Length: 248
Ligand SMILES: [Zn+2]
Image (cartoon, rainbow, N blue to C red; front, side, top):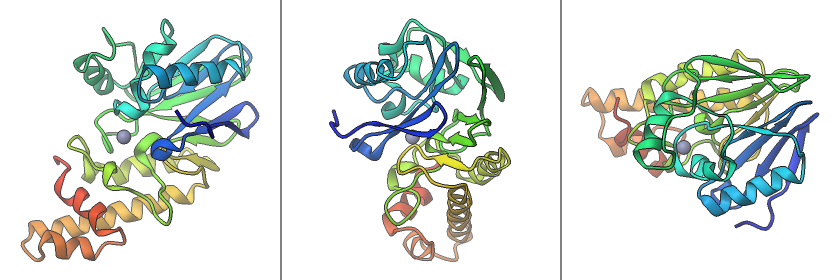
């Protein structure tokens, strides 16, 4: 457990909490009647730490949203139960399969608005991308977007080699980021890395388009994977992960 984690207020009642481990960011949005916890960290102990940390901010009842099924975002969910938990159906399938929950909770299939009392947030599935079940959270009155791993920010760049897994759909990812950009947030919180402005959505989309171009050249037999990776703006090991791992 990181000892340096602390809440930072990005807007009125909108907090990010960053952890040194994996440079993970989780979120908290406080309304007048309830609060929304965005992601739950990676295991029971980490989830319990986060639940305690939420209680240091507010005693209001909580609702949880999981941005996707990857362990570092979702496997701490038990610490918050029983409560309403929202996620995409694909995320629920995976969490049931790996026995992190007994049954699916509430489903976000496209866009779901949640009234927290005095403010409404929207849970948005912008299409398949980093996984089949990514959900972002927009807080319109504060201009904040919690984007999960749809965008990431490592020192000096965007994605890492962990960003591209067997369930990543590279070809659909740029369109998902366009949909997020249309939400008009002024602060974007990546799943990993420091919160920043909406330009991160553009930078990530540009990098993904370069990867798609590189992958097209490999598939056309024009370049080897290593040659194609070297032509992208990303470090070679990151580009190779994107060129080799996604299933689409
Ligand atoms: Zn992830």
